[in-house]
Image (tube, rainbow, N blue to C red; front, side):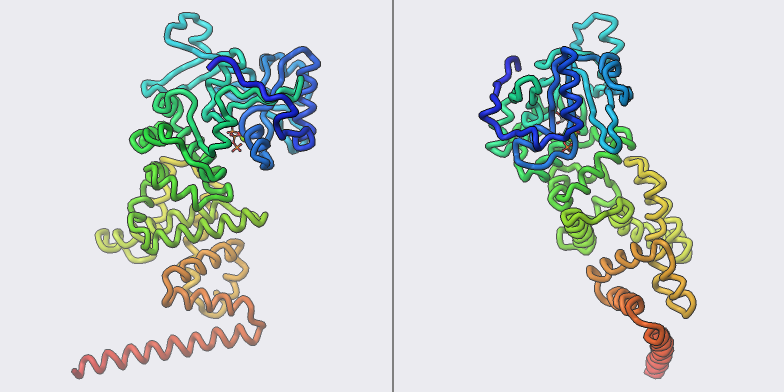
Length: 438
Ligand code: ATP
Ligand code: MG
């Protein structure tokens, strides 16, 4: 890679007004102490694009210990990557030391200890420090390898990132296949940036992905949980989902759901797309979303399918089959993605409440309104009703009315229901009788 193209302050749009004060503090302090200090990665990319960065990452030639020496509010973290976190209340500025290479010819014991590679070419440990040029080569995409220098406010562009931004291309630095093998999560990142920035993955960077997608099986489920949140809760969840499917990646993350989504017009596909549309809308209007709802939705139809199977083949009754199906499907999903208990518990509530919402007798209906997960379960039912129509839609409408009604209205809704179910029962009997006669 070698020399960077240096873009002086006058020729790029990044202003210090758009940089977090805390990040500036860290950069200036490092620089005053005689170290090089740069902003790097997503924040430089986003500022170049006129977007508001999520966070500000700093790199320097100071070692983690030297960084710690400069900041009282600093802690060192990470094994795979050793980093410094400088903590300012709720904002954390991540400060990393330039990373270097570790080639096989490296017979240096220190380097061997500092880095580690698996049989699949995956990097397991990565703590060799290096120069800024080496650091740039180790980054993923060309538009993520731009460095904003606090010493003179210039931007150092090591991999033609500016050109990639202009041509709206996500382009891997180096040999894409080697880089995906080193860290298969880069395939998910390619898709995430393409969707989020509305750009194309460059042909050479896109080509190897479908064939290498299965390497995601080697990523620890806890890391995948974090990545999946970023994929789906970025405000471009639907676009991301479509790209994941196109690149054969979705099935690696959700092996039980993917087979149900082969038909783009099926209720399964429409349901998930609708969930993602709603999620995107909420995020883009500043509302909160919970991963529990989203995961509950992604696993709903696999549960329904498993439940049917347990009833047909295992001879279980509907209630037991449903409980077992929830356990089975969740257990299998957890082998891929480690969903923390604080989300899997509400997911289960949402699922369980789906059948309880069907049982609307007097006191139970009132109790249901008090359930802490009623709102989520009702939203879930509403969505299922929209997609499937029929009785499910009527059930959802009934709950809408029941919530909005006053005391008398609620009583009436419940008694109508009793009348209704009685009428249905007599109807059934009548039909039965006619059949018998015929
Ligand atoms: P976001 O807007 O989602 O934060 P980002 O590009 O800042 O996007 P981060 O995960 O914060 O993503 O990473 C910061 C930078 O670190 C990236 O821009 C990239 O240069 C580098 N990087 C992150 N993950 C990898 C990876 N898996 N392989 C190589 N470089 C990476
Ligand atoms: Mg970032």
